[in-house]
Image 1: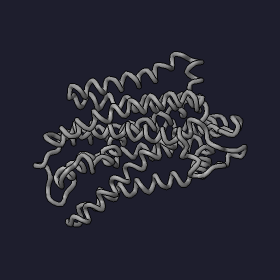
Image 2: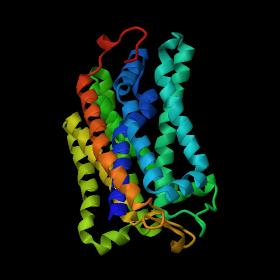
Image 3: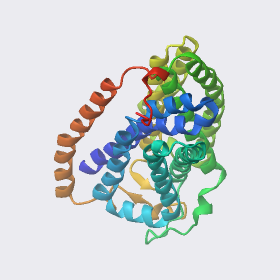
Length: 341
């Protein structure tokens, strides 16, 4: 029972991380396209600045839960997928540094360098996280000793790349909507036009990915065995449609919340389909890492549950306060020399 609870919490933490940091990653990727001058670029930084580091708390929490609740899975994942995970880590570091360093020197070349770092540091995690989760869905070449028998390039298969493209588009839509929510004037109009185009591309890729998932993975097995679970992908579909309807009405906050629901539902669709596996083996299902053969002791899981129920609400309260504090739109008049946010 405890293993199942922590499996669900593990999936929810990843879903919350993708929902929150998704708009940062998407907007950072799109900045060269959406921001046409220095003022607009500073506004883009400003609408991300107060939130990005708090959003990444959920990434740390998801990784910590993997380590503490399912240590064997953590060991197998971080040893086998070391190169991919280090690329994600370095990209996130570069992105974080760009927020701090960009306005330290007021020369065009310096600012341009950190703008490029922000874009690369946003795009790579979005792509690689999608590639990683898609490969987990279809299974990875782990042997009986839980040793990864592939390379970084093993992950770059058609289904894995499709998952990466899906994540990038989900985050691009999410980020464009966030900019539409938090800006005004030409920048907001540009974000609105961009998100309409991105939504159409997302719809096409989402359909392709769902069809490929049917052929390449076992995710649908849990759903056919328990048809009520189809409510999860149905929610994803309805939320995606609602996103487009709200975009057409320029109801940006509603569109952003609908996009958030889409991301959460898509993530939970994969997590619920995996259960009880955490790292399926493509070599032999018997070699898979599951909640049964990779979890910590019951006492550890009980202690962790008490800690989580105590501190996670505090994190949520803090983030609600931050969003309330910075709830206003960002305009050129808000910018102060030498400060991004």
